[in-house]
Image (cartoon, rainbow, N blue to C red; front, side, top):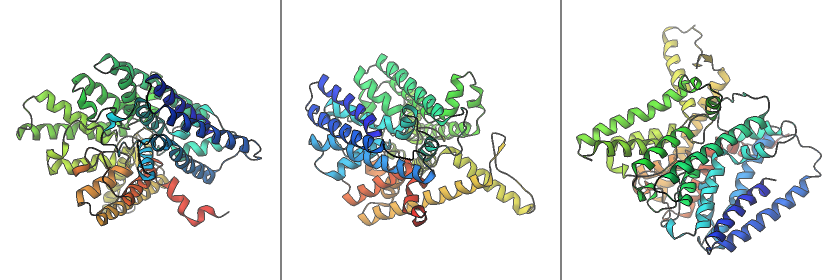
Length: 471
């Protein structure tokens, strides 16, 4: 059924192509026909299934296969229209979209027709809310299947089930997601953007994606209004959606009192003030407001994994290279559209490390890790530690592949971190997020890191464990 839903998005992009009388109309229309035909056949084949309950193993497999299949079908418009001449680039661009990474093989996006541009933005918008969460919201499953799909796809460390049914939670999240997208579209439209650009940038901002309709992104408009509005919504999209839900319920104090949110805000403000001072000292700008605006925007863009680039941050020096890698690794809050390790996991690691030092002088003491006044169960702490270890191991492995390919050390590490954290821009010559010159093996490696990072590592890597396939 997911293919049927996805075909509706393709139909929307086809409608945009028709409206603008673009050359992409028939490629999108054919892709729509293929997608809905396959979806209908799979739906008919599944109607006779005798078992609709899905366990954790089935949930992980269904989520991983869904992302893979939709990426394969989603790349059809690029290939059929001739906008990409090989499967590797088409797959990479589509996977980068669905995982909201935002790295692109296109050097000149302004040469693409409107329908394709809209499709690129739609892939990120779907990936932001989570394809499976979207499915659970609109097509509730029977039995425990919805719970397993939701848990396998969403990124929260511990889900706060504020409603009794997973489908109700998914619907609330999806409703908030749509509302935020609509509000941002209106605000951008009130600025210097036309409606098409406003809608596309709203979708890629709320999804923490970063695709743009212009070659130089938001720099095209060079508008303080656009910068500040986009910065605010990048921050909002990287907050835990459960807290945003409570905000709409009149419980805004849950956001301000939340430890993860406070750490997240500090990770934006402290580097911003530091880099502002350093840039002013080194005369990188005479207009204090402009330097503050671009610094705040760029740091927010990196830590939220949105990936918009409005300045040459590589020129800020080695100190910012280190800061950028930290921001691109830790990233936004759990339960948000952002990628990365997640600030919640980082806080748990910091607190657990602090407790270990305390136990050096008090070996018999029982010191639990607490967040927001609540004790974090030991198995959750261990899972976070395991996650962080595998996360680092994947970065090292990915960096090694890129080093063998001939990339410099900073570019290799930057690309690996950017891919697994779903950031987009990296370091060195890839700071703009354009990776057209990379070899095919590297692109497939980065695409794998993208989906592993987007699906929180365990969901994908578990498929490669022999125990996963045993009864």
